[in-house]
Length: 215
Figure (cartoon, helix red, strand yellow):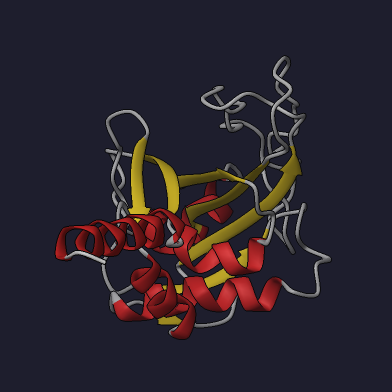
């Protein structure tokens, strides 16, 4: 085998391995309340929305959020004494077989939330199935984080929302537990911000491994 042939084979292997490397793309939509920014170093509690309140795996997801909040200087406490309620919802839905490049269904931005003592409705995670296409099966994975001012909410009787971070990953995997560390990290990159359009973050295999290790 000549030197040039060997070089071609090596480059072919490298390109093949690069194509096979695990990457995850997460779309993020952040919406902040400009009049009421999230207070710094406040106390908080991570709470479930009605969709996930009975999920036995919720504490695992909540811990991912707590780790991020603690790293930013917030202090975890009980719901009754917390200044901030960090509500969490997540879902994975199976799409119909679709052609590559089809736009995913929009994430729901409306609805209320219900957790112990917080009342009213749910977030209504998007469950629609895109029409058309026949090439392959995919999943829409969603994780939503909403920060409320619990004190103002209790005083006014209305939900005082400070920030909403909606994340979505569309892929051939519905392993939400494996995807959650990446989706939470993407959301917290924009905590308190209103993003211009839908931001997209691509995570490399190395980044994914570190986030899963730190969970």
